[in-house]
Image (tube, rainbow, N blue to C red; front, top):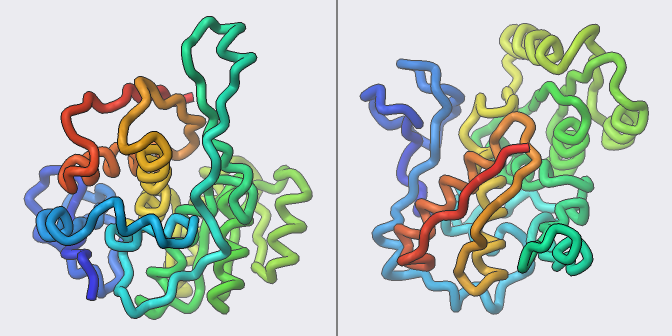
Length: 272
C-alpha cells in the first residue's frame, strides 16, 4: 500500500501520467523531470503530525510521502533529522534576530546527498535495477557508493580526474566501480550517459530521475517539524544541481495540501 499515485511531468506539456511501478526517468514528451505525486487529499484526513512522535529520527519518518510501499524496507543508514543550530555570535555580527544552521554534515556520508540517494536507491532496488550510475564531483558519488553497497547493488561512479583523492578512496572502500574522466562534471555526465545507455544501467544523474528530489524535500519537512510547523522567513541554500531547493519547494506545496502548514507565506529562497 502506498499513497504514491503517479509520476507527472513537472512542466505543463500535457503528457499522460506515468506508472510509478515502472522505470521512468524524464518526460518522454518534453524531456523535463518527472515529479512523484501522492494522494494528499486522502492523507490530509488520515495522517497527522502526531503520528511522528513515536517514529525513528530519520527522514523515513515521512514515508507516507516517500515513494515506497508500506511493506518495503528502505535502504537506510540513518539519514536525516539533522539538528538546527542557533548561531548567536553570527546573529550579533550581522544584527539579525535569529539565524539557524541545518547541519547536514551529520548525515551518514557527511552531506545532504545521503537524503536523495537513500530514497532513489531504495526505489531503484524495488524497480528491479541491478547497476546504478552517477556522475559526481564527489559527495553524490560517495553517497551512491554507500547506499548501493547497503542495497547489495552494483555502483558505477564517474568523477573528474582531478577530484580530491579522499572522494575516490571512499568510493573504493564501498566497492564502487570508478571511472575518472578528463574535464568537468559535465564531461563525467556525458561519459556516464554514454556507457550507461549501452549497458542498461539505472541513471541517477541530477534531475534525470524522479526520486532524488523526494529525499531532498525532507529537509523542508524536518525544518517545519523542528519549528513547530512554521516557516522561517528565508532559506539560504548552498546549491549545486538544484535538486534540494526544488525538493523543498515541492515540500512546501505538499505540507500546505496536507494542512500541516497553513496561513503562512512561503519562505524566500536564496541559492548560493
